Length: 489
Image (cartoon, rainbow, N blue to C red; front, side):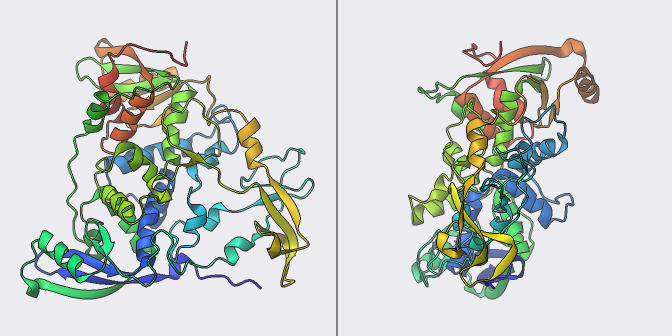
């Protein structure tokens, strides 16, 4: 029988930690490539995956620490969870794609010593043995009309081994230093002294070295603090309080406004917004499926691609430092712009983030591996040599891309989007209840139209990581911009 590695839950990675006892603060951590690779893999995670991992790590309880970014993404995620009607989704797989988007670096992350995402969960296969096709989505029909009902064991996962020479850093046997704010450098006497000098650690008697084995639960806490804190290692290892950066919520919108893109030829998406004249806030937006597809697509974006589009100073935590560290080790790393796994077609997509295909088009299927181990469910592998008497399988997922309906939600329906990015199907009751909840007078309201292109989309994504009032902070600067070509009539 094929060898199975222990799960990430039971694994730990040793750390040597230098602590400033007087300030109860981590100065730096010395560790191996195993921890650094896992840390850099944060950049590959789609936003929906981050929400799901953090909620699971917290056993579904309310997070004790949060940020506008985490709240906004959680609101989007919960909106997708709560939209169950067949009148909303274009296809049964749309909701699955948004709640469990594939990692664009999936094949690399599967080689990590500690894969916090457990990417094997997203590589389950469903095989139609009537016409030799497979899909990674449950509950869809094959082109022959039958439901793929075979659930074969994935040999590629069972036989995987962690990369001995590293996955994202390739320095075999090297040690690394990681500062409290996640700046990563190769370990040396000079680099350790530089960190001590920068932190003003002149009294060496106040420094203490401790050892600690870090596991998956703490690494997921580190992921959370990476997004919200200046000192994520201190927060995670010493359970000390964080000091969040204070980024003006409309900082990014202002930057984009004065640097429009000359080649912005994306077809515009018109959005009607209800604005409070006295407060100058956008109360909610009324829109069709194109805009909802766009904001829902935030859930599929990996951190690395967001930093690539917005810049290293866009997040209030230490994501930018992690990104710059990865760039210093490998300026060509896929983590610097992982892209979105293309599982659905959204042609009116205003952001220029590259799309990648998730899987090879051909896999091989059989009942026995080369060691003649028999599996009643069947076995699947992308390697023909792994299967005894293999049958070629063709992916159904590409048929969904080529021939399926366009977009996640039905384009012609109307939706209401709150200032906090909560999305609901639009109705008169939704409008009235929302206005009552905010205690606003009808005389104080006015309706305006904003055309969303690449500049406006970047602004909206930018403030999504810094502001609780995303629509207001991201779009109010564009309220008086003349409309261009749009997708609504």
